[in-house]
Image (cartoon, rainbow, N blue to C red; front, side, top):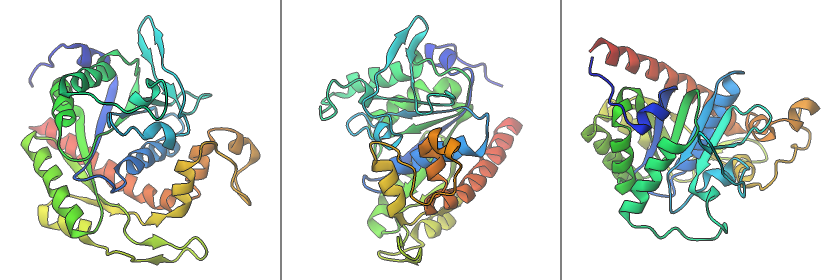
Length: 300
């Protein structure tokens, strides 16, 4: 077995068990919402699991808003930057994004490649991630400087890396998703599977799913390319409202105990959405694939 290269990044991530990179070939396919859902589902699936989510979509950071921590600040400690905890009371869901570093929410990030590279390196080496079971990384759409920088900095911990590719069913999105898949193969990044997002529409009144655009394209791509298909997620108005909300307000008629509603309300309410219920199955398939991937790597 090759010795692990000693770098600031490898030292900082030495206590992170799994690093899952969320990719998409094009923008607008819901990659960030899938990243947020993965982090939330991992959080609620275990009472003691520790999860981090890193937003390296530097020009379009949306994770802080989706997790209800938009406007929070990052603090410096003697051991590095302290991430923002979406669940302040438990401190099991750590979040870091360039959105926390902007003076104003509407400020644009106009950086060239070297500054983006430096920011990604700092996120990986200077943030006090601590012991994590999973670090979910939300990347920009496409295959850009950020992806190359990320893979370069994570090369010492390559054996703990894997990817999830997000697409929508339409042919244009699938063509771009193929480019993401090609990128993962070029850098030898194991793919846990493909998520077909916006596959149909959930009626907010009756819950019936209608195929507004098309469906099945992501599953067909996975079958053709020999990668796992993790599942399909419809357009879910409850999820959109939840992730867009500035404040988490208990859902009217919620069956959740009052004590739970007062806790990390986002995670509790997420479980009640149609997407939250569907993502449980996606997570089961993802974890099965992750275990099989680890076994294959360890046997080589």
